[in-house]
View 1: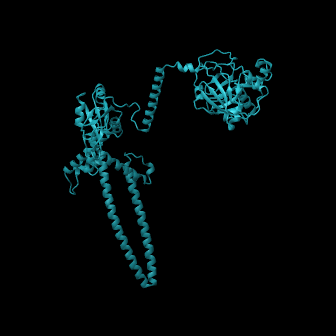
View 2: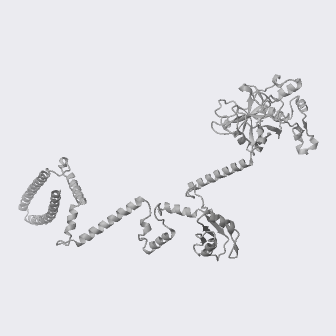
View 3: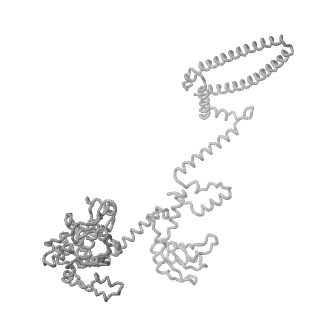
Length: 586
């Protein structure tokens, strides 16, 4: 079951809630059948929430139910005096989620008092949290139906209306007619025919309709009154929406459309910039470049430049060619020094005949060159104030890469491209490289010692800070493994000699204790072997040979150890000598 509201802003189709609120749905349908809503105002708009309509007075204080209308017609009294003016608030209550939806039709109780439902209803015009009916302070709204069709965007238009402090729009929005699309209630309330007769409403004869549509004759009227406003309306008349739309100047409308197009273009440019398809949203194509197409493949750059030079002596034409074959793609770009020359060439050369081809000329919309400059900056190929890394130089560099096996020769553009940090890094690396070669050349020419080593190089190494640092770290590492490292303070001072003597004394004591233990073990073994030899001569002879062999091995091992310790001591003397020399220099 549905109802069509024909308003001054467009049409709305409402599907009434016949199952949840049958009494409220029947009341609205029968009022629409009696043409009670014809010409009524949309009298209140709450932006982002709802709009109220259905009051013939136009201020929210009027209206009645279908039963009050019948009673007032029978007794010839005002509807305000009828005892049946309102019906009970009996129907389905909206849920919390439905209160946040757009297009919900709700029955209105007069002044929020229960059981005072008349002809007024409201429609939600927005959706979301704290929108529509959410957060209004009530949770007992009665469901009347839902807007199912809004092809003209009526709800959005209502939400954008300019209203006064009371919420009434400055331009009157009215219900032109309320058409019934389907009426499931077969019987009409008693006395409705009197109301229809009084309002001069006549319905169609079932014989005038096809058999499958004969039932529609109950609500399809062949004659009904048309009025601009109800007779009960008490508010002042304002400008209608039709007149308001007519008063809009055409130039204003054109300017508004132009502004909307500019905003759309701007938003599209910003989106392309975010996606990386444009270097900047403010980038515009050059005004002094023309696009020429439909050229003859035989036309050359020089010919085209000569033809367009009549407008500007410095005109430059570039025919776009295939990268592999070099054939012309039959379109070109012509650049002028001034926009005036480009405009004159556009008006005079469009549809001109060149090499038996009628060309087309238009202003260029390409930003390829600007994009190339932007891409080169991102690659570090150019900087403000310095020479640009052109495409030809880039190709030359690639050729050098292949020629030198992946290593490219330093060129002018390589040394002068990039930012300041790049310059600093290159300068520091160059200085280090030059200093290293100078040192190598100096040591090669310096005098040699008896072993062919450079004396100056060894001296410079000993005096360098790196060598002293390495020597100091080595000394610290040795001191950490000493048993008396708890007293080591990490500084070279007066206690170095005492520590060195103490360390050597400790080594001598340890060596003496080891020699005593070895002599004791030797004496024990000799005594045991002598006792055994008295028992068995053959066994004592074999033991003697083994002992002599063992002593010989120990003696050889001791000699090797003596040689290695001698080398370590010589190294240690050399280090101590270098330390003393460096200390004396300090």
